[in-house]
Amino acid sequence: MPPVFDSEKCIRCGMCVRDCPAYILDLNKKEDKTPHVIEEYKFECWHCGNCRISCPSDAISFEFPLYTLV
Amino acid sequence: MNAIEKPWGTLYETDLLILGSGASGVGAALKAAEKGCDALVVGKGTLESSGSLGGGNDHFMAVLDTEEPHDNLESFVDFYMKSAYGYRRAQLEQWHDAFAPCLAVLKEVGTEFKPGEGGRPFRSVGFGQPGAWWLHIVNGRTIKRNLAKKIRKLPGVAILDDINVTRLFAANGRIAGCMGFNVRTGKTVAVACRTAVDSFGWHAQRAGNNSTNNPFNCWFSPFTTGSYFTLAYQIGATLINCDIAGRTTMLPKSWGAPGMNGINNMGGHELNALGDRFMGKYDPMWENGKRRNQIMGTEQEMLEGYGPPFYMDMRHLSKEDVRHLQYVLMPADKETYLDYCAARGIDFHARPLEVEIGEIALSGMLLADDRLETTVKGLFAGCNFTSFSGAMCGGYTAAGHAADDAAGAPLGRLDEGEIEACMRADMAPLENTSPTALSYMEFENPIRQVMDYYAGFRRNMPGMRLALERLDLIASYKNRVKAANLHDLMRLREAFDLLELCRLHLGMCLQRKESGRGMYKLSDYPNLDPALDKALAARLVDGKPEFFWLEQND
Image (cartoon, rainbow over all chains, first blue to last red; front, side):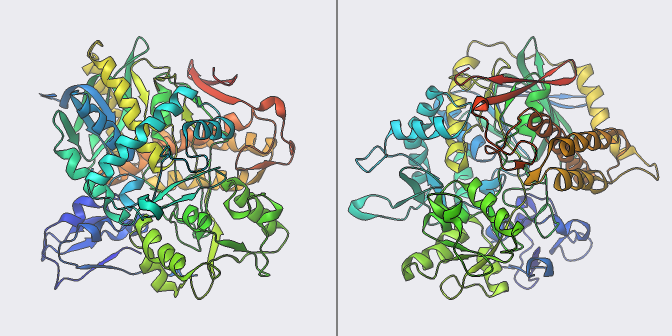
């Protein structure tokens, strides 16, 4: 369910982090600044898609977790 | 607006304080600017994505006063006066009057509506309503973005994003301001105001679970947990309908998403496990009757063993209608809808959509007069009307009165000593290093454990009394919680709001000794009591809730 980031396409603008209403995204500050879902909060994703709407480089897709598929 | 730096944080001064930046806050900001009023919007999240509208929307309800059946003020007022409690005719007239200006703004920012015949927009009939009032939004995913662009440029309107409001302040029965903390920085903010609009959001989520047991996987925004009610209640506002206004919807199986209004009002049929269409047993309008009846009907089928599974079947609809539902309306309501469909192989045209009964969401209203002013002077109710239309028009209407009154109202005087004391209390969980301290989920999960077990669709008075005792026990742990960071602290505040609203809900349900008006059935009071055809109210007296009944138009 949480977003998956394509590091090739991502331009590291941080807009997805700014607009996530759940505050569950962050940038890999010590590495390449690609956004990531904070592991301990990934279940709080409402799959609203705001991160993807904000993304200017089409770098975000969604992978639905098993519990939404059963 | 003035911003004054203080040792404890920042003090803002504004004429009109708008509490919340969702659809209602947007409507309020628009009206404040129209009135030339100095206004400050304070909300959690960012204006571009906050609230349930941040996830998109596919419908806007609007009476357009054409010659079409029931497309007029009288039918609109009549429907809401008969189907809900606590509305006043003047309030509904103002909701109606706000349709046109709010629609004009939506069109101005690029919102596209499905066209109908004769140059008019297409509209369909919503749950149980007499007329076709629901406009279909074609590009609903980006509504909030487009509105935010306009709001950020409004003269006299400032926006404070990322603020979790923890308290409202009142003095002598009059709103004085609010305080909270920045979710990203931890900095304390307080706002002194002349008047305020409560736009925190009508639908409180996370009170219960659906089949996935993830409370964040729910119908509307999971970050709205009842502060619309609880913060106002704590400073003296009277609440109504918190017993019977709770709602549930059918969800796509295992996925929290809106959209069922669209499927039902386009003619979808609900089927049980045997493939039988059954809703005629529970509502004369079948699936497009009252939403409550669909839930209670599906629940009854389940108790009798005719499901799960349940399905919404759209195969009999025209190819164009099915395409419109799956590829236009649903993704407009939730941006990731087609990702969900792809993951589960869903095709509305080829096979029925499996659905489930969703979690119970709590709601109610702030008791308000003809001008939407609550029982706290200067505090106006921005979220008493339903749906996107009700939120935007409600905020818009409330802010009109709040702006008018701000001109002659005193600026609230906040006690800085009190602010500092509250700040220390708000931040205390960050300092709690006790090995037995509870994380936010360790505190919040037991709330749902109690509500799901004792306060589901079938319940009874002894069970609810026990549930209230259990919630009181959870409340006694409020000083034993910890937060590892500001994110956890924000969730704890949401959990506190949720707990208080659940307690008020149960307290009010215990007064209403009947079944048939709320989203539940009491085994010990299974019938409708005509004498209880009225609203139930709650207010805080000496630290405890006091309940009383209102006659219509009180």
